[in-house]
Length: 291
Image (cartoon, rainbow, N blue to C red):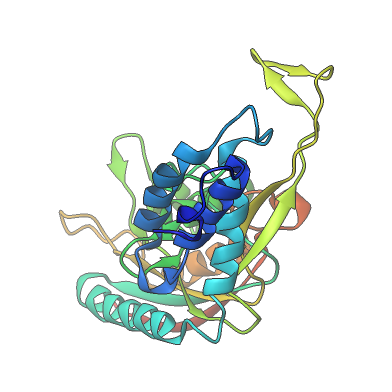
């Protein structure tokens, strides 16, 4: 059921479509956001009429979903979700201490909006976002953290105190000594965890080319993670390989983390050249075994 169920006859499909989307995009903080968005996207598509509604269905859905996420994930409403996120991080940290030789817990404060994993196929949005289905919160994938760290460090150094960078990150056919974990939000200090943003493409792509003749600017609204949000993540290292050979030591471990923090200040995610994804990393706590 949705608000448009009554009096459907004679109404424009445009109105029915909006009622269907808005009427179902409710109580998202208590639902699995990924599943909810997919189900609503499919359910309401039957009311989309391209001849009547000139904007693409995905654009319409993206706008409404982004606004609803902003309204639903207000900082004042998501306290329990953030508590669960922090609890998960702390439990993971305690387990990692038993497995790895050096474990670092970093806090990552967003200085600007973050847009991450924009082509996430699990969420039917024009410009997507990473979303954890269990904690029901956006997150920063470990692959993104590792990627920006590796790219930056390799651009300025070939080794850390004589240890090749590939030893930390891994190379062709080898596993690195450093393990990166996903980052999850633990603090929300502004209005909302999610802020809608807008871009306006001016040209359409037709058969791989830009079609200027049929130019029709259409704003695309998409979700971003708000500035001042604080994430927490874990980076762990082994000192050596399975055969027992010691490759790095506590000093090199701390040096590595220093470069990782430096790398993260360069920005992460999409649109970093435009100022998005700026991060202030802080080493919160560590557990480093002495050799």
